[in-house]
Length: 217
Image: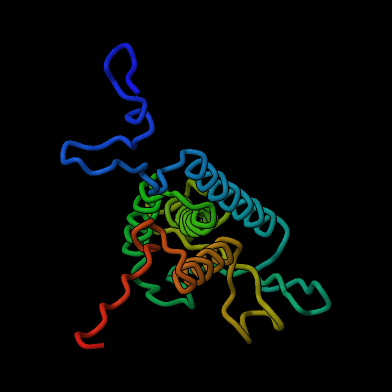
């Protein structure tokens, strides 16, 4: 049957085709979602704010040589200042660590713009917040007077650590802070996502093609 314009009704039911005559398909690749980027930034901001708030409270209320026992001895608030990286490594290269951390933070800020899956907004938000939380100490806290963010050499600040598990003074495990906790949780989540096939990009989640059967089988 033809319409008045000469087109058949059957043409209305056919899928659109491209210039090569192949049917066009909707793009099923997930697109970037600004809401997830914003969620990542908010999670990072919350981690930074909570980390800095607890550090200020500890500096104002706890003496460095007098740890506070809480949770029945499961946790001690044991104030210390770390010029190095995790586990007090590279203590003589504070400025190098600050530069490396800055590069990581900038990279994560731009990477967050490409998030398409909700779990990755949480993971990257935690990592970004943890890295930036300690970076604030690197740039603003002084080794000579850690309580005064305006005193001391630029990018030479010591990170405030205060959580010691099981025993004070880091006798069982290295003393850490909330920024470290956020960073570690974010990294663990990233590893779990990768191991379970939930990669960051849609391409990393594409099913692998099945091997072609050998001739004669």
